[in-house]
Amino acid sequence: MFNIENLTVRVHNKNLVRNISFAVPKGQITAVIGESGSGKSTTVSAILGILAPQADATGTVLFEGRNLLKMSNDERVQLRSKRFFTILQDASNSFSPTQKMKHQLYTLTALRLGHKKELFLATMTSIFKDLNLPESVFNCYPFELSGGMLQRCMLACALYIKPDVLIADEPTSALDMLHQQDFMKLLKNYHSQLGTTILLITHDLGVAASIANTIVVMKDGEVVEKGQVEEIFQQPQHPYTQRLVANHF
Image 1 (cartoon, rainbow, N blue to C red):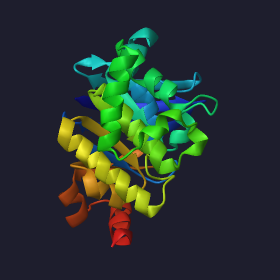
Image 2: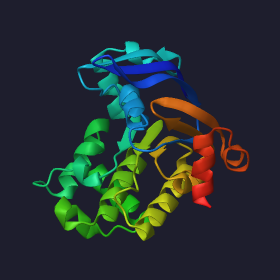
Image 3: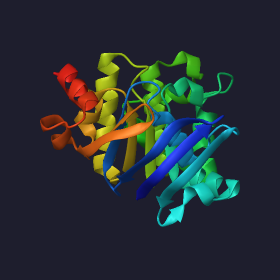
């Protein structure tokens, strides 16, 4: 699905990401793991085409044979609205505090796809049931909902859109342990149901191990190790990965 080759991202002559390469296979869950400042989120921003204006990205990010870095802004917007969906670290940042959830969920889903409100309401109500979200959420403002409920609302949007690629950028870091587990279980069910290609960004090796097929380990803007989950846990090669695995146990 994705093939990232020699990606480098610079800001003011400083490399935030240095010459990284890894693949995101279609229909699988790939986890990119690393501490804060490792370059994980910068990599996602490069993929989505939302880097800061002063940032310069070189290399290739191939999606279905096309280099995303060479696409026009309009083409990127089309991809983000129709074929990609992103769940951010803090779901409250994805919603306006001044509008009720029904309108915002409609804007994030049905409006993108050209669906009428009647279809949206029927479909989203069914999705809510699957995610154990009460219909009363429609008439709530975001600040009236918990972080876990807001993240489930974002997952509901993904279930509605059925994107080719779901990018989850630290989706559990703002949640307590119980809600983290609940969300990861829902994300795993989502993948089982739709087979969507998922790129999961996390600093938590346990989160990655619970769901991913492949793990990519980043440190200081570089990929230091990559492999199947079993390989990473059983025979970590890089000292940083070895520390991550040791700390996990």
